[in-house]
Image (tube, rainbow, N blue to C red; front, side, top):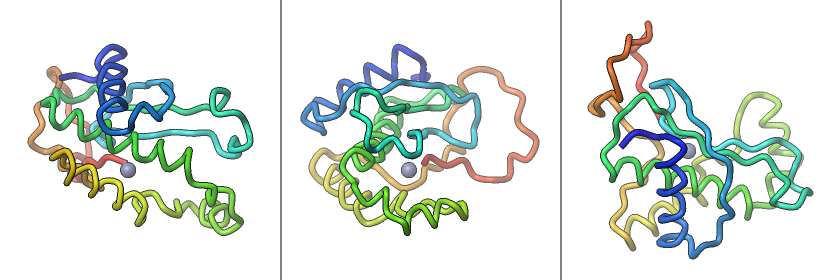
Length: 157
Ligand SMILES: [Zn+2]
């Protein structure tokens, strides 16, 4: 299952219905042509005061791999948890998190809130959402020229 502008929204809608009770508004979707990140949730800093529908919110996935459906689902739900927390976590605007961000840290990417939701979904629905994914055994989407420093492990954030 290769990420594209058809497979991503369909998986999003299904997961939104099954695991998030339709609470998440459909974001924008994007593709990354890289093995370094399997998935990513992006938002624009400082938009918390804007109405949700006017904010820049994107779920991105790598089109480098041909995922099995289970892995595709787990990556999508992982990004949806980031999205959910972004919408529901007012602490994002705190001085402390700005301070961390200034120095290149993200305060709570996979913090206790993330872990709690991931564990609940894993137990309740038999998912396998983890902080990172080992992509070394996932087949590539098509013949690829490997990037040079293929030593580092791909991860999903
Ligand atoms: Zn993550």
